[in-house]
Image (cartoon, rainbow, N blue to C red; front, side):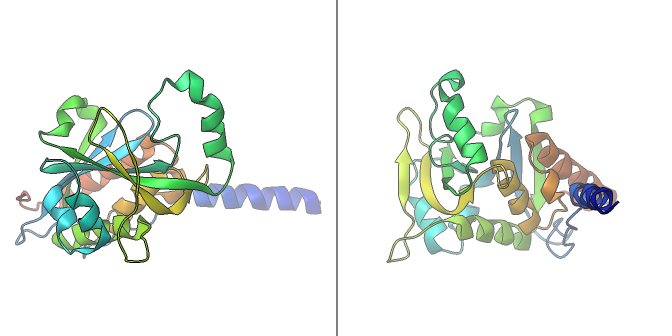
Length: 234
């Protein structure tokens, strides 16, 4: 009987965590009708999510994130992502990286990096409509998102961001992160945390997949539309 009770308790706990929703913050999201908000995009490549943020919004406020953004190539938009320091940066064919992928998923404490990738033109055009979601953030919400990205950056003794890698063939730059990567804290968990910092409701324990993060963002925008707010101006 004690064993059955323990199993039932564990199942109930897992079910509760799986359905747990972290509520949004109406003071941050969505933008009020009387303010000029910030338009960002959430992108889904099938298993990984990135945010597309105006470059000016990352520079505003200074600090290591502004310094990291300043050294990027030209482009008014920046793709922001996070992942394992090795697997995320490597672009060789997946079949040859399966062992490294297993290491990244199942070994706790893997080093990680924040990706900043400048885009001169609208990067959302490469994605199908169902794989991109617009988010209309308030200025305070954008500041919360920015602060969460900056908190992820590791810095040197002088407080500067640490460049970890620069891929040949594109403008993406990868900066050392304070956080660690594994199955309990994946790239999509990180993106969900950024959305939560911007005031959106998320289901943190379900944010294993990119589809869950996209659903959370889409539902948040649908609920915001019901408030009959004026369109945000970027």
